[in-house]
Each structure stands twice: as structure tokens, then as C-alpha cells.
Image (cartoon, rainbow, N blue to C red; front, side):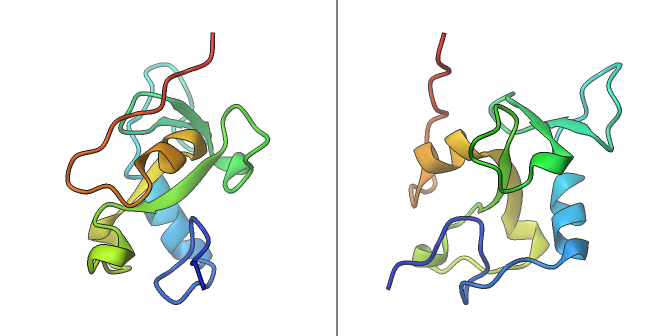
Length: 104
């Protein structure tokens, strides 16, 4: 069975403490409230309240930097916040991967 995106190694949801720790790893956007807005590794804007929302233009997910399929762990050092579209683009690619192309 395939593990769903933005879930732990075992397929479970991340606890709120982990979600907040990963969120804080996102880049702050100057002049924006860092508790509400951050950027992912590709520079895409994410809104904290849109965690897990793939219908949102600002939805984001927790990504395993080294994918679980390649031995990645749930340690916060191996997790990053990614806009959901970039998470889909990355998939299980590692170490090289490319950001999604933004729709015009």
C-alpha cells in the first residue's frame, strides 16, 4: 500500500508540535507575519492555516527531504515545509529534484 503524502513513515498524521516545528523551517517573507506566511524551498508562498489543503493556492505539506522510500526518517531535521504542488513535483526524487512550474 502506498503511503499518502504529508504523513509520517507509518502513514499517520504529524502531531501539532511537529507541524509547528516544520512550519518554522520555512523562509520568512519580509513585511509579512511569519506565524501566518512563509515561503518553501522554491520560493512559493504558504499560509499556515492551509496546511494539507490542496485546493488552496497557499496550501502546504510536510515533506521528507530524504524520502521514506529511500530510508528517510521522521526526525525534524529531515522534514521541510513545501507547497503541496512542489511536494507532488518532488515525489520520491532525491537528492536532485525540481520545483513545480507555476501556472500563469
